Image 1 (cartoon, rainbow, N blue to C red):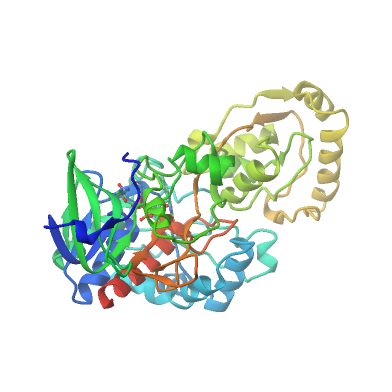
Image 2: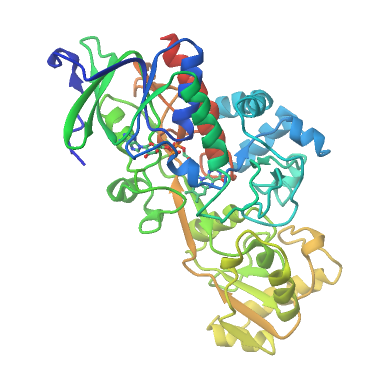
Length: 487
Ligand SMILES: Cc1cc2nc3c(=O)[nH]c(=O)nc-3n(C[C@H](O)[C@H](O)[C@H](O)COP(=O)(O)OP(=O)(O)OC[C@H]3O[C@@H](n4cnc5c(N)ncnc54)[C@H](O)[C@@H]3O)c2cc1C
């Protein structure tokens, strides 16, 4: 990667290799959404994509879109939700410090955004999947995807499932996911609207005129420098910085050596290019954290840290388990589960059967298990004793796991070693307005520059819910397209 990030002066360019009204860098979820809306607003749109085709991380993803507030799908399946209820959940779960203005717009516009996706060819099946899981294993259309129905959020807002998943029957998590079923129709619509695309083009620098307005980009294609003029605006949509080692070390060191749910092209270049023009950043330390535990097993056992103590209701969103494990518990987790619950969890349908690890320790008593695991004497025994005392009444007053998953832990009992079982992607990035304008450190928008997707800080600050990435990438991607075309 060229290290020269300094903006190029338009005065130095005598002839442009390409021109368009709106130039979009990156053809993933944010890029395709921006392109469609810019084209619909009458702009001539050119997308520059570093790889050989559209798709990005979005095409590989599970396809969960975080939508709610009373979408047609939620209503058809009998779930009540309102923008206010959705907002209460998002502010509690995605913070502290989540962008309230963005969350408000996102919740107020969510029903319309669902209709937009449907109108552009994304199909959601009217069926609900209610099991604990990372993703939906079959082709159902709706799931809980952020711990809405688990403590503490089930007391902060009325639980409503908001993980909307495009229909697809032959999924393989991490290899062939529902995200393709979003990107395929959207990129087809973009092409029908006349959006042009140039592939194998790596955008590297911004081009500015004498007034500091962004008027194009400099890029590289097959070793050749290209200049591309943007008559109205440039939209940055190149993804996160999960694969930029220096940036991860500087901003989100907890993720060092463990990038996940991202692609190598997520090298933070757009953030750096815009920083070189004075762009502001937000929540650069925030990260999504995947956890390699099968939710069907976790809900049936108890998770303890390196001190033998519980720290999370095990029936919550597994990404919250990942965050609390990596960020608050030294990345040390053990799943304590008895034989009958382990067998029941293994027999249940799961989208992640490959996370069903074999027990590392098995014992006839908790005392023996504790000793075999090398935990301080009495720690695990106390934890199990307290858990079982209340579980006999079907409740978990300590962490609020729902009664349906609460059952005394019997014997023989096992422990799964889930230490260092985390990976994730970065959520921080360029600070943008609700209309996807990139903000200068002074607080003013940088003229001609727009951004969306994971190169920006979206609706998440500390927390995460599955679907918020494709969700805010598409939602604020659309805004970026509208704003750039109107510029
Ligand atoms: C296995 C997996 C499962 C996931 N599941 C979900 C899920 O269910 N729900 C959810 O919300 N999120 C999910 N995610 C995360 C989600 O896919 C991404 O966070 C999201 O796609 C980010 O959108 P984006 O538009 O910013 O980036 P992308 O969709 O990755 O698009 C960015 C594009 O920019 C291109 N690019 C990069 N650098 C340049 C450059 N210099 N010049 C030109 N082009 C460039 C890239 O090649 C890429 O095509 C998942 C990710 C993975 C990998």
